[in-house]
Amino acid sequence: PFLHPTCANFREASRIFFAECLSKCHGCLGFVCELGAGKSIMAELTLPSVRHMKGLWLLDSSLGMLKYSLMWFGSCVHPIVASAERLPFKKSQIDLVASSLGDPYNTSSSWLEAYRVSKPEAYLIFTCPAYEWCRSFRSNRARQPSVAEFETRNGYILELPSFIYSIEEQTRMLEDAGFRAIYRRCVTIGELTQTALSPKLVLDRGSGGPVVDGYLMVRS
Image (cartoon, rainbow, N blue to C red; front, side, top):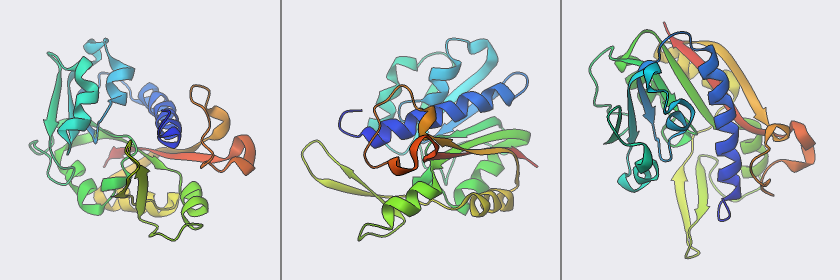
């Protein structure tokens, strides 16, 4: 949090939206797959109440990132190194696909793959940095809008893909993959209470400044 305060703000905002969505997902969560899990938000919010799940698969393309969830690995939590575009599941196997801050793999092919592994009426929870934040922050930088920059501990700048769209465009992409929207909203600065505000947020908009856009979808 001290090295990347913006990431800490994004994660807190994403967690807020996830908690709201889980309260809207009726019944047992069943089999859950969290994409790009890193330090798993789904594990934080649902464990140790494992009776609500049959299994939680934490997927990430980086083994190093999965190690941040090491404390939850156990009988119902399974780490898997895999790409969001090639999920290691059979057709119609998953009850809930979760993706917190999934902008690095926010592509049509990833959502088509999520559709493939989802059961009929399965849920999809997806968050990404807010489009309005992205448009404000990245437009003032001499960089591609689809690239996020992170400063490492040794001072190097790491560039990673980051695909962020307007709520209308994002909804259309998810609908084209076979999901329908049941809840969407932007989590704002005024809702953050656990992390220090990063100067990279849109602070001039006050408590209404955008932080994270969230989508709760259901498989058609």
